[in-house]
Length: 136
Image (cartoon, rainbow, N blue to C red; front, side, top):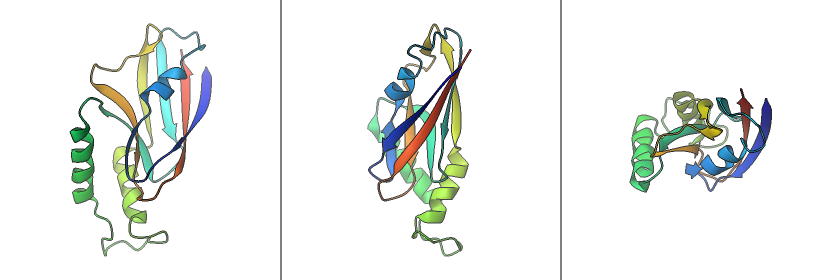
């Protein structure tokens, strides 16, 4: 097994393509067939797999999740870091904190239009750590 911790600086709410950084973790692993596990060490951001060609998809995803989990909902009690605090936790719960991608022929077995993204759920920029584990 090979494990690497990657650090990303987000610009605030939105998606950042991290496919190439995750794929680089396979380099030197010697693993031809296996699994690549991606785990984020935070409760207000998520790794996801989604469309990597049309940026409209990212905008539409953000619009949908914004409608589903609005900022400043008066039902939220946890607002320690502002009106996007609790919604960010709900968003992370809905989109999860990890994902697994098969490794085939030493490469991530992603589909043609798939990419791995870090989805920042907070409005302000953050430093995020992602642990990538590659196993045979």
